[in-house]
Image (cartoon, rainbow, N blue to C red; front, side, top):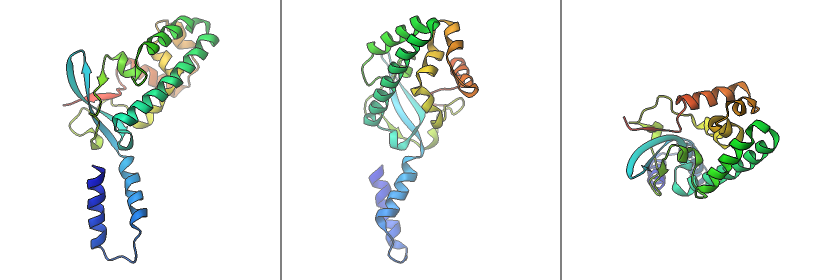
Length: 194
């Protein structure tokens, strides 16, 4: 996809009579625009059934390699945060350690949010798809909200079994609203095909 984009851009650029255009700078500029577009289609297995989903993942992050790297970073941030929460909020100790055990039981590159929904994205199935055309867009999480998924406070507030724990976790009003929307199914990491 990137090669096709660069080839079309190069051909287009050679047809325009401009004074000494910088192909390198222009290509970098258009790649920056391209990589920040949102929409990533992928296949996922739930038991033995393969489903097709789309997410607001940026084009630049829409690959198995990049997703594995993001998942590993998310996992380490959440584990470190959960350990801290277990030590600082008494009512969250059991829930935090249960989640630590759960995350440690997953493979290193598995996204804990996907695992909680029993979905495992298929390797090499990530394909950029502008704005997830052809998929349900209602309740789809915006790319900017993906940063919340790296926060252990938000993770535990969503998945804690003890409601007192969820209430004692320090979150601002916007984060509490996000947690509430996620729990109700109003914020979805990915959506299914129409």
